[in-house]
Image 1 (cartoon, one colour):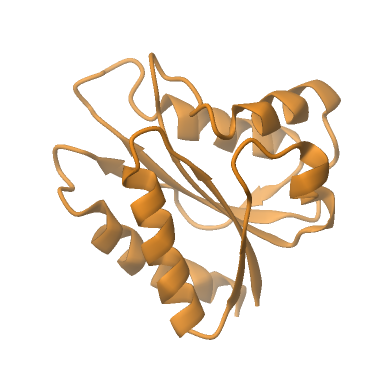
Image 2 (image 1 turned 90 degrees about the horizontal axis):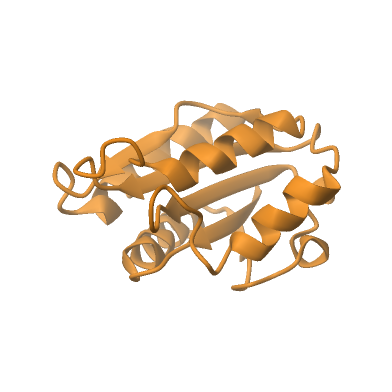
Length: 150
């Protein structure tokens, strides 16, 4: 299966998670295409995709990481139908920031749903305090998540 991967990262932790998830999916026989940083809606072409995996952190006070903010903004403004898209979310954050914990992943999740996409499985919420090895936790989660498509 082809999986389109979007990675939103500020400090590099989510990039590490994205790399490990990619390796696990490739090992399972899936094809992965990763969105380049600061890509546009045309680059992402989400209206023609079937499966999306979003791995994103939160920055600032519940904000979207800068490398995927242009895409988020463009999707918010143009509001394309994503009714053919099924997706999963791996969110990284820190519960010490109570009100803004996982703000970025939650905003993406809400936007994708508003645009007609269907989330498959539960959102994986990784707290920096509880998950010192988020890459390992994400790999275990993705192995279960991908089976929803079989």
